Image (cartoon, rainbow, N blue to C red; front, side):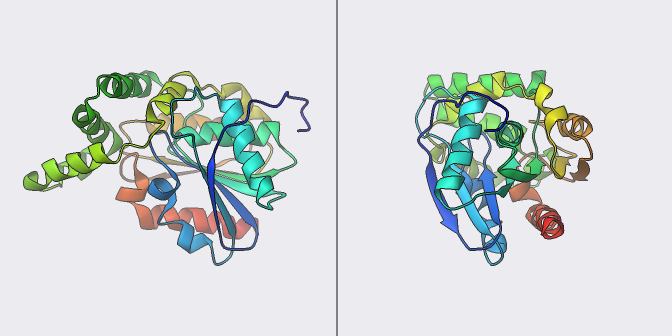
Length: 259
């Protein structure tokens, strides 16, 4: 690290590597995962990029932004990436911003989607409900909270009523390990002071109908990073479910320009 920051404690990450070419490092969102957040994007990038995705710890190990940033960078370097672009979603954007500041010799560009520098009141209240539901063992309640905040109103209201029980059951069954610890980090993560120190090309993407991380958060990210581009897509927070084609196209176009 060239900014003289002390290295953070290393986290145990499960890493998958696909493709070859200029490296792209993925950073997923809280309660998500590499496959859940980037499963549709990876096959599109792999023909031209070395795609490195690391899942956050699947237990309740306490997390810090520094530890996530350093561990994601360390995993990328261990898999042969000397420099790379980071493509991050939601909570992962805080780790990507911190990585760009702590490891400027490694990170050469950023794509930040559905993110925040400091979660606003609504986002913090939402993830507090996540933690309460998980602590109580009420996975169905957790699923209802996620469906109501993670997706746009139009998307949720477009689901046929008879399909709702099955969808809620699927969400409840697929809660990743480590979600509670990731939700706790959403509450406390704060990279506002880092934004002005980001010195790489950056694309920030917000979603107009995002009820979990209001697009104002993404706009503030973009405003704080010198020269950052801002793009707003329709739909809710889980852009890979609501607007995958638009999102994938935006990421790929930005990466093509960096090459």
